[in-house]
Each structure stands twice: as structure tokens, then as C-alpha cells.
Image (cartoon, rainbow, N blue to C red; front, side):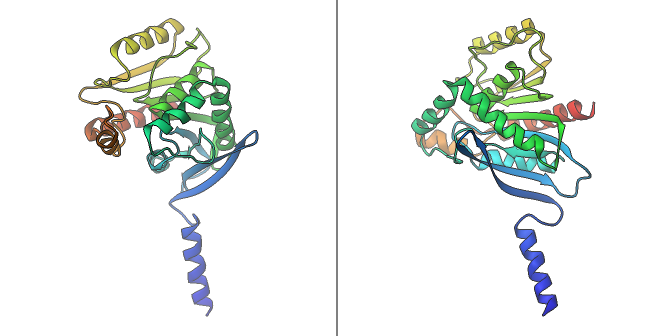
Length: 263
């Protein structure tokens, strides 16, 4: 009987995130009175607190794509939090609703900064996180969020934008940006045209920012998301998955984070 109870307890602990290996947790934190739903992933076998990496979702919301990136970061040894910019873990099923959600944040910079900082504080204070070593990555809408955080002087060592918009109403000021910046861009992305890319480069150079820009030929918007092809077909959107570019961009991120935290 004791053996059966012990085995059952082990199974329950494993299912709930106990034991060793990659652990996953549904977490809740707040921005003022708004409940935000995050997804935390870390390697329970890693020794000591690890650098923390925030993952900001696409305009669709806190979906499986963002969670998968958190899992991949945990496999690299980071403590990762896929955060929630919309509240309640909301996910849009249609581009019109996604645009509404994203617009709510983009048009209210104070809200954007608060929602991000609430997640940052949660991750920074987590016992599995070394709160002195923090970074953030974002996808599409999320890419623009992490770039705005860098422009706002966020206390982050690095930010990386995957196929994110580069335009801003709050350009970086000289000496204000603390984070190293990595931009991973699809060269065929109609939502981020060449003139926007050039303006971003000029902005970074003028502000003296430590940045790296990598463009991928043949890649369009949302090139890292396997679900992009389905969205393109269903809604006639100029998006698409590019496995080769996605793999290359992730390898670039791996090097970038390793240089940042170990260099």
C-alpha cells in the first residue's frame, strides 16, 4: 500500500511540475486591478538562480507560440516567463480582434510600460531567477514592445525583436538605452518596409545604441510561427512560416544571450 501511495505521489508531483528537468507553471500576477496570466518555464536541474528572459507574444495574445519560446529558453538554462499584455490571458481568433487588443496597448504607452514592468517584477523576484541578469524577447507586436522598453531605458541587459515593427513615436535618446538590442527581420516583410528599417538604423546610430540587425532573405512577417501559414490562408494575410529563417534566427538569439550573460 505504501509503495502504491509513493508511486502515486511521484506521478502527481511530475504532472504538477515537481521533480527535475524542464518545469512548467501557470502563474498569475497583477497590473493594478487587472489579473495577468503568465507561463513560467525553467530547468529544475540547473544549479542556482538563472538569468531571466521575458517573452512577449504576437498580436494574437498569450498563445502557444509564446509558450513554446519560453520552453526553448528553459532548455537553454534560462528562467523564462511568457507574459500577458492583454489581461486574463486573452487570445484573439480573428485579425480584427487582434488589432483591437494590440491597439489598446500601442495607443497607451503608459499601459504598455506598466504591463511589461509587472511581468518583469514577477520574474525578477522569482527564486529561480537571478534578478540582476534580465533580458526580453518579443514577436511581431511583442517585438515592438521590447524595443519600446529598451527605448524607455528599461533595466534589461538585452532585448531581441523577431519580425517586429521598428517605427516609434518615442525614438531612443543618446545614453538612455541600457540594453543591447538584436533585431531579427524578414527581408520580404511588407509590414516593416525598407524605409522603416533605414529609419531604425539611423535612430540606433544617433543614440549610440549597441545593436545588431540581421535580415533573412525570403522571410516575411511572422516567419518564426508555424501557425502563420494557416493565418495567411484563412485571413489572406501577408505572413508565412519560414523554417530555415526561424532556425537561423533562434541560433542568432542563442549566441546573443550567451554573449550577454557569459561574455
